[in-house]
Length: 326
Image (tube, rainbow, N blue to C red; front, side):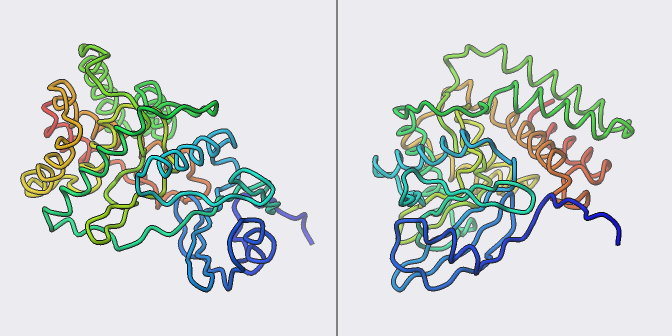
């Protein structure tokens, strides 16, 4: 028999997690554990007699522990401030994070409470407004957050410069893509640098607010999946919503987007500079998400990343550039 091959990404047994990991958290006796979905990380549903929780198991080396501690601290802070979020559950030994000895190495896990309700209906302008209002409240409350934990900021160095380098390295043979990425990056950098720094709100952002990652129940919006949260430009969350919900749909940009924006500005009005840059940040989201897939191509597979088809990537960027006036 040939030598064993190392594992880079394993599927962990739900039964083993139930008996060895879930039991470490401060909850009533759990009844079952079920692999719920694969995404950036793995999510398992955990049910007790009267409550449901979700266990997120981070991929090995997906984030340093410091970054996950940042996320847990931010979620706890938001809950304390009355912002509806799927907040973390304490570990019996202290903190919010459990360690798992997986075949590929240590994986970290966090158990969060259930976000009540269902996904928003974005055909409903009322839901769009409620979601916008909820994001603005989160941004406003986040201004008071303090933590010793650090993670990369959602700034131009990360969203633009690092993304461009990653895309260039992966798509060096795709001659059609690289000039578009370079020219857009240069134009966006110049446009953002021309705006006074204090004109752009900078706080802790959700980081992955693509229209999912929240539920609505009786008019209350509960947000979850903050694994990408970090200090950054508030308009990045708005641009990520526009990117995810509207994309290239002109109808959505004429209807759902204004409803979302009206809800947001009812709590946190935007400066004119912020408004003028939102479509530029939509492009930044496209670049950042493309780079994210490339970084994790070994886990996701080439066909499941946004950089798998150069022609489609060029079409998306060209269309988004048109909306942004480039």
